[in-house]
Image (cartoon, rainbow, N blue to C red; front, side):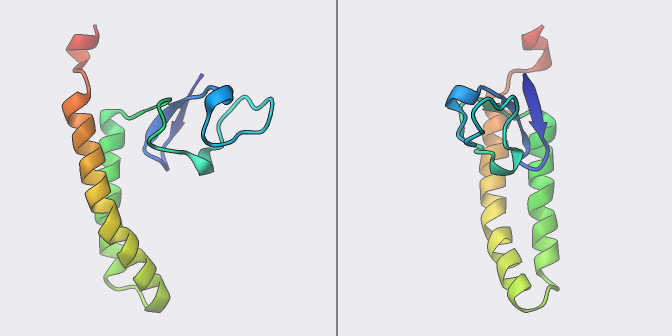
Length: 103
């Protein structure tokens, strides 16, 4: 069963026995709030890579005018996410097969 996790920008091919999200025994779905993006059962589509880049830009924009501790946290995330997003999305772009190759 495939589960789209738009918050983690990926799709999970859920297998309870080896899931890193630590689902409850007998679980039939992943814990989407505890998604592990580097896990082997996850894949990223072109749309996920695009949204990942967009989210990095959004966080950077939100961090600029935010007050106090919120600004500090957003700026820390915004500083980290663009590099991660760019690397992750670029890795997807270079390794993803084209639609023509899949048919």
